Each structure stands twice: as structure tokens, then as C-alpha cells.
Image (cartoon, rainbow, N blue to C red):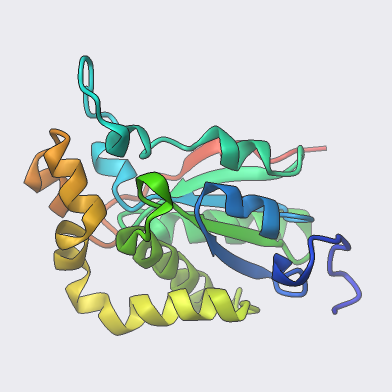
Length: 206
């Protein structure tokens, strides 16, 4: 472990020795966020259809697009939090690099992809996480855990099919069934279409 690596005891699955960590599902933050400076909640559908009006609808699929409290509650108190997807992965990566430069040292990053309701695998979320990890790698933040490397490789290998995969994924179909438009779901797969950074909790400036 690097001498400047954070010390914590979350067990074998903490990925503690790596700068960029990845896991899946809201409760995963409890495994990989120990000592993290930045946590990223990745929901590939969130930027486009997270504001869908669900009044009167029983739509747990849409509710799951919000940053869940289980994720936030598992984070260190001084951990900055951003949300990311496919549309804004590059913007989020640039923000993370700027935050690392502000800190003046390595920033440790816990990336958690959304799971579908009931904890089911969310292909769109994993692709969104892979897009962010790939963007971080391009910026030189490349000390990735094996888990993060796998998510990144999935995105890189499937980059040309991302738009289709998001729409055809279980999460994409569930969102459409819940009332989202097919166009909104397709838009969520448009890589780099947003330069906005969705800051959920600002960094501690002290």
C-alpha cells in the first residue's frame, strides 16, 4: 500500500490500496468508501429522466434514479459527492482532477453504480461507471482496482453500442414502462452531451 494511502479496515473487498475503486449497488459505499475523498453515484439514466413526474404512479424504478440515502449514509462525513452518467462522465472526471489538484495529493475515489430495483444488475449503470473510469484514466488518474478496470473495459469494448444498450437494458425498459419517453432514455446514452457537473455534496474546503 502506498505510504499516502488512507488507512481503514473494511476487509478484503474494500479495494483500499487503489485510488479508483468500483462497486455496484447503493450499499456498496460501505465497502469501498473508507478513506475516500470523493464518492460518485453513477446512474446512467439519472441526468435525462430523473425529473420525470411520477405523481400518483407506483414506480420504484423511477424512484431509484435519485441518489439513495443508503449510499450517502455510508460515506465519510468529509467526502465530496458527485453524480455521474454517460452524458456527463467527462465533465465529472475533469471536476475530480481539479479537486485532486486542489487537495495537492492523490484523491481517493469511490465509484458506485446504481443497481436496478431489488438489487438487480444494471448494465446502464456499469457502462456509466466505466465511462467515468475511462475518462479518469485519460486524465492520468489510472491507479484502478481490478473491479474498476473491469467496468472500464466493459465500456471501452462496448462504446459504439452504448446508446442501444442503455435503451435495451432492463433499467431502460423499466424507465419507459414507468412513463419515461423512449427519446429521454436514448438521450441518456449520448456520451459527453453535457458539460455540467452534478455536485451532490461539495468538498470540505478547510
